[in-house]
Image (cartoon, rainbow, N blue to C red):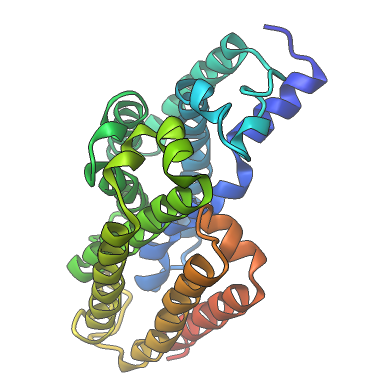
Length: 301
């Protein structure tokens, strides 16, 4: 394998650093357990975040190898390094193996339970890339499980339990993003091209996806609201018995969901949730305000 400047640039592109924002789900247990001021817990969570970035990049490399021929028919993905021929499959595969081995050693030193979670994440995504992507409905649910695993990864490294309501809410919000992405692909590519790019898309229709998105949107609002009101923000010893102020974050979550639906249905966005979050000013401002209210509610007392 030749470590040319072009290869390194291509590897970095395939690693998709913009997608690492998804791994911030790992910080949810730390923040909601009111341990962000705990330097040891903060350090462990930051290390878990970096390791999950490594493992998620391995998944993206595997996915790009598996999707090589399909991506060549996609209007945007055809410009990625592998389908564009800017790097070889062998180079990407060897780099992926190296990252996986190094990451696994550090992950084991951090926490064996954390290692089990990231390995399960890798195995699940390998199965998805080569087989399970053709299972209708299940394909979207597997994408959603990845977000839930990130939350549990953040919890095990600081030895706390995850609230049941937070777990359920994470499932629904991840399904919301996954099926909104499917709808975007169906609209962007058209029926025939969509089926050539991703065979599972022939099993979906916009009507079906609209129904699913409606259900998971409502479920996300309800479960997050119940988490804020009914589930005490006290998974660990540092939290108060109950904190009513967290309920004031609910309007920001509702606006964020509705704004994302606006981008999906009116602007034909939604194919890349990370890009929508980082480029839409309203989403960015809403996210900052939500986070500010969360910190005020949890850390002001």
